[in-house]
Image (cartoon, rainbow, N blue to C red; front, side, top):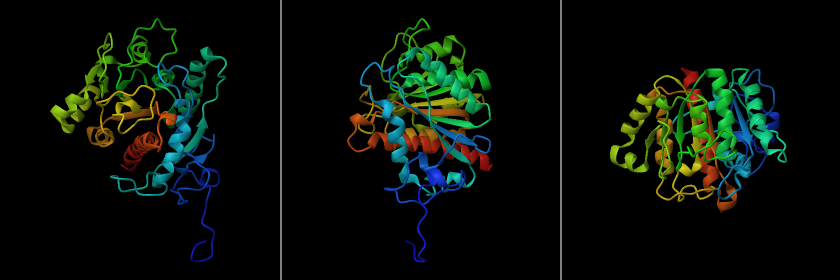
Length: 320
């Protein structure tokens, strides 16, 4: 109860507006991403948060089908606050909804990619900005299909430990092959794409620029942001954030952890730098959050923060 005897509002996920923050207890109430209203009504939304609970394409430890749930749960900590370092609640200017999760028949895996792409097209057809929560990294492939249909070939900004360019004849559902496939199908422009945090070796780079954690150490944050700016320019860009870009110390809950990665602080600073660099983000995702391997939601908190930064970047752009 408040000082005036009024019951404090709860369950903004069902009862609140799609604009404006809510102020619920972090530990209570219905959970959506940052307490956004659950709705399929797209006409008034600037941004849509959408879960894709799919992990049948993983090559190591499964479990990221539970990623959307975990990210939503972790996002409750941001409820109604001015977000750092933006200093504002993004929902003062940004009308955003939680669209729920992608629907598909898990027993017909060959149909799942087209189901993801079709549902993404429905969302994008209204001009809303789509933020997707995976799921394993294969889900980015049908998301790129849908975004490229709307915006043309994309500049890809990929935060990852892996290049995901392993050979594929075009028929694999595999989280390690989708980038090469996207290049061959001209969904992305390799000459304008960049991968950050790579610390494994793949047979080919497909012409995409690679930034390793060692490069970040030697060159510094400003230089890497400048490399992103020079590579991407003002083209329509899609950012995919595989949580294993982070060192396992900051993201233990993932299917293919690789030591020696970025810290949460470094990755978030690079993301926040997109605004000053003039990156024209037309969509983004967070993938590979696998909560069964994390005892304290460390990884989900990192994933939720990345997703929150995407929305804050969009809100900053709308404010201007």
